Structures are given as C-alpha cells and as structure tokens.
Image (cartoon, rainbow, N blue to C red; front, side):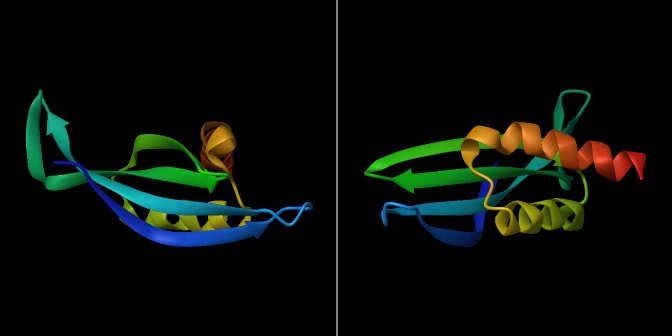
Length: 102
C-alpha cells in the first residue's frame, strides 16, 4: 500500500502580498518483483502540493529510487529552491541527470 508522508512546508509571499503554500511529501510504496508486491523492499518518490487562492494543484513522481535518503535529499533541494508542482518533473529529471553525471 502506498504511503505519503509530509516532509516539509514552504509559505511563499508573492509580489502582490498573496500567500501560496507548498507542501512536500515522501511517497513510499512496496516494490514489485515479477508482478508480485515485495513488502520488504520499498520504492520512494516525491509529491508537491500547491495551495493558492482556494485551488489545490499537485504533481508526483513515483518510484525514483530504492534509497529513502536519496529521495529525502532531493526533497530538501526542491524545498530550498521553492519548486512548484508545475516544474517538479523537469527539475527532478535535471537533478537526477546531474547526480548521475558527476
């Protein structure tokens, strides 16, 4: 069963003084091996939720890594850079590419 835990929240004040809230989540789900759930091995992903003007927007990227620590580091970077749901997929792709090429 998929589990989603809130890791952090950013409150952003825009130029016109309106508030936007960004919530960053860790997704944890059992991995599948040969189509069968393996509850002893987990895959981790990221979800970002934006609350602004009564509208909630979200995006998630599942199954990024078997390493919880790697995904938590990614979430920390996303929070520092105030990444929104709209750019989540592109930014994660870029960060993973940089990590693999360095």
